[in-house]
Image (cartoon, rainbow, N blue to C red):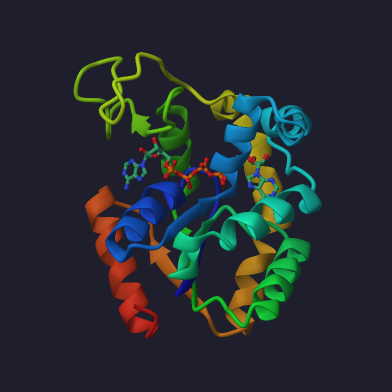
Length: 219
Ligand code: AP5
């Protein structure tokens, strides 16, 4: 199975994609996580991506395509994959179609998570993550059990992402509206888009994701 999670920054794509990948036993492929990993390791790709990410801009299509191409060929992704944060513009959507077609694979369902902007901003500004393992928290909705200590790896640095500052959030929302939102229509026209209401608790949204996949015959 191949799934794509689409939606503005902070709607819960990563949270839901991780859960769905765990329950299905398939690969969670987050281009944002891969890029942050490259930045942390100081690779050439990371050095190129960092200033763009910090400014809320998209990194070059070719750089992201290479990462996705490598990752989608790994053994765990052979069973199925969830793309989180990719594709992000029409060129990336065309690149992805060509990549999958070349391997005799396809996207079964695109889940577009929807959330009013007044709910998105507090989700983003309250997000924190572990610098060691990348586990994601929220200051009120999902804090670590022991304050300042990562539940997953015991890491002691739980920090705000540089692009979750208010001024960058505004730019990310603009980039989404201009470059990524047109993909909703693209996948609607391909008959594989389902919309999911992102309001409510993480469990409530997960239930809606499962129902949407059942309804689309893509479970
Ligand atoms: P990326 O990491 O993909 O960021 P994004 O798309 O902006 O998405 P987010 O990670 O901000 O949000 P999310 O929807 O995953 O929400 P989450 O589940 O964490 O990309 C970052 C940057 O990398 C880009 O700006 C760009 O520069 C670059 N990049 C990445 N991919 C690229 C590509 N394909 N091409 C070019 N450049 C690319 O949830 C948010 C918070 O809310 C968390 O704290 C979470 O705990 C909380 N939360 C989640 N669900 C709920 C709920 N139901 N109730 C309460 N709180 C909740």
